[in-house]
Length: 247
Image (cartoon, rainbow, N blue to C red; front, side):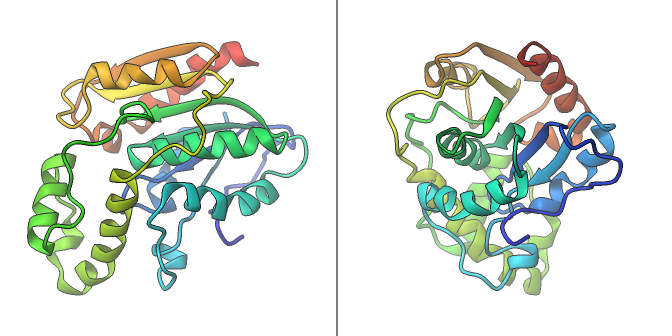
């Protein structure tokens, strides 16, 4: 289905909760494919598939988070099906996009059980350190500084040509993000952060408490802004533990 990655549907009960993953800047659904095995049947793992990457590489990427959410919601709802239960996970850009999707999903009557945000300040906090608008080399250096690592694909001219416009569009929409709704969501929120994240402080990670009228939890992992690259299993274990009381 266009707009949502194809989940692993083998041996999946019809009433199983979906873990809907929302990619960070420059990433696509394939980042979360290993989570299907790591989830060990705990969820039906799928991902939002934004234009400009992977199967949708030839499509124009979004430059506005609210428009991206509205443009994705129909495909997401169709993929979830009737009587769906869903947990949303989003890292960095994916966190604020997931927040917008929670508003849209609950308005459609979808049972959103929890929002798990990662590596992100609260949705009303504007980013002071910016990369959008810089020349290509300076832009990539700034993104590398933010993320704490450099993707090896950027060292290959052909891959860089494909990835750079999407990464620039993603950074633009993240850095210019303003929530579409001032009201907090009603679903529980868990905020995750790498304990040495140089882009998001612990105080900023805890700002998500103001974004929900439900329960709130805050958890830190060893690592920097991109801690989740090597911590998929640990992240899923936390999601399961935090979601246990939602059922």
